[in-house]
Length: 377
Image 1 (tube, helix red, strand yellow):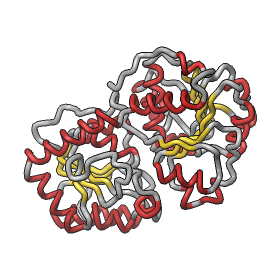
Image 2: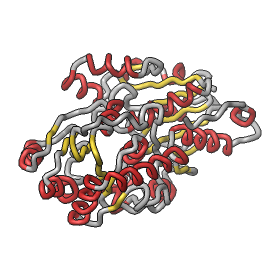
Image 3: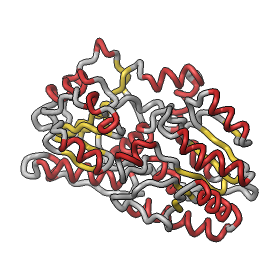
Image 4: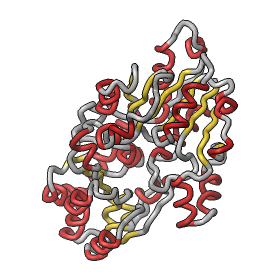
């Protein structure tokens, strides 16, 4: 089968978490013998920011790590959408694309091609006027990365059909690595500042617990303003800047624990969406403590897959326990890893995607008779 994917970027994960999931989906489809083409604009913001900070070597390093992945980088004024879609069985267009491209893909897709709009952001509740600009009447449905997002599309009549399609871990890349005899530190956090969406939460659930406990902590991420960097220095946190996403597993292996601090729009308006970093951390077998979020869709077993801290004081207690009790930390990490392997890999998500597409027209679409091997490893 031929899959054609229109995304902001496959190449860069600089402040672009969707690249994590996309790489895993492409790799999974390729492993099953499918033909996959990814298209991204040659001036994608994430790529230009990455190159500005780290040069072309960052792009070369990505390609060396993912030699089987390719992205067609196009000029917006010269892009032939019909040619890109020629022979496609399934097309997916991510919401971080211009409305004009979204509309043109819907109109140009072959009649037998299933076309989906993929939403992995909180703009459906934080910026609904922006989302209303997308023309989706030619689409077969929306792939929403949480049930709450799916409901927004239907309630606002932005589409006729919407399906819940959560993110997941690419376990070809995210898996436990050998731990050193002596860890580099107690706590590592990989995440971007998030503008004004979680500054208060980062203070309460990350910066202040590190300061109070005197933990040896490291932080990776981008877009940290000067006052945020000053807070990190004052708390004794070692800030290391951008980390290529594929290097996260080796970094997780060198620390005793990590935390999850969700952005405010997800906690208040979109329950049930953990974002991809939870899946990836658990897949790497590191104990995790999360600031509060409502696992409304029962993706995990909070308290067994990861610990939940209702406030900064409880975050301190949980982190102290994980640093001091190696047995409890190992048990927590093992349970979280088992849950990801059983339910939340890119292999599972490809199975779900194929099931969604097949359900739309099981009698006539080539998916109905396609024979393929299924692997969640």
